[in-house]
Image (cartoon, rainbow, N blue to C red):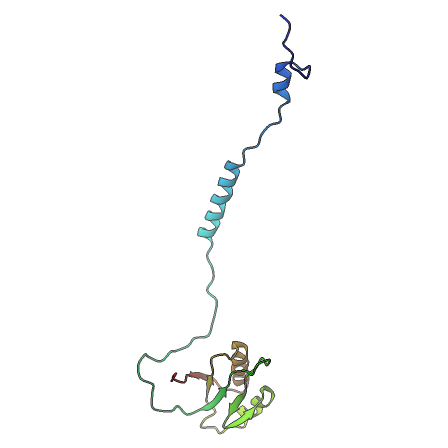
Amino acid sequence: MPEARGPSGMTRQAARERKKPKLDMAPMIDIVFLLLIFFMVSTSFAPMPGIRVQLPPPGKPNPNKPKGLIVRIANPEPGQLEGTMILDDEIVGLNEMFTQFIHAKEEIKNMLIIQSERDVLHEQIIHIMDIAKQAGIDKIGFAVVARE
């Protein structure tokens, strides 16, 4: 009995052999997700070192004013990146702040209190903290103004 040929002139057996193999992607996707979950669960993240801040207890503000240098930082004007800094009722720039810290009275030189408004960038506050550390001030505090 002769082999049956299809419209293309190929035998059925030859046509079956020429079909392209299909690659099933579902098992590979499952394995990728399992590996992703495994690495997410098994990875441990090292804690980032930061600055330790001792927050005051909730309640009424402390009426005793701490002794130290007080830097007030106002919100930046539109178009400016840094807010105005006031040290001892005098406007100072970042360049002058180091000399002001060095020449401060010894009884108030041991602590710096930073009082900033809401829209002051953290970069400016950190820069002031760095200058204070370079000037030998080892205690830095933050003061807040109660909202009205």
